[in-house]
Length: 223
Image (tube, rainbow, N blue to C red; front, top):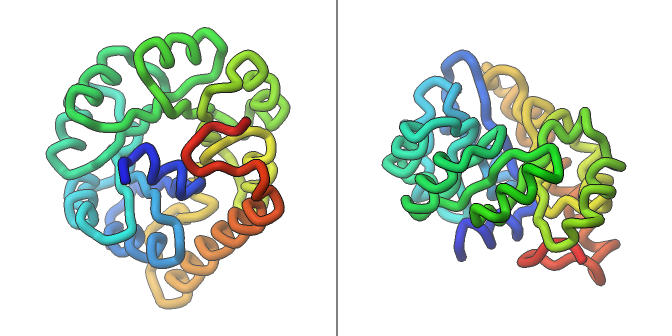
């Protein structure tokens, strides 16, 4: 399965971003074992390349690099074994470099102009950012002229709101600190809490897919 299809099949994208060190690879493994197969490790997380390399060959996981904003980031992500890159905005040169490296691109957009520019550059997954600030109605409205676009809602989204974003037209919902926490778990209780949050997100996703099974298609944008 390609990274593109695996991301769509997951429907959830975990954003692993920590400012301090710790066993970040274990965080990735724990999230994956809890049912979220798509995980990005951001470039401002300490030792992010080592984490991606350590997890790239794990079964049932699609791992990428997040906060990719430069050509150097693209090169480092590809060398580490990432299969996709996620950027906060759309940069034509970063996009082109990632595509040349065989990486799927998830490019940040917030306006119709940016959607058109990203699509013209061959971007298939459009990261609506900051989705929480823009709101559900914004996503519903921008999908009007871009009904064929595939949106990845990102930024300030709570686990309990995953279904609402999927219903509004997101094909993938990204979860950040509300899922991972602001620091790497430090004890058994915190690791258990991480597993619980990830499992809760999977439950919300699966419940939505069950109730909307006549509309959900894991390999296409919402109709």
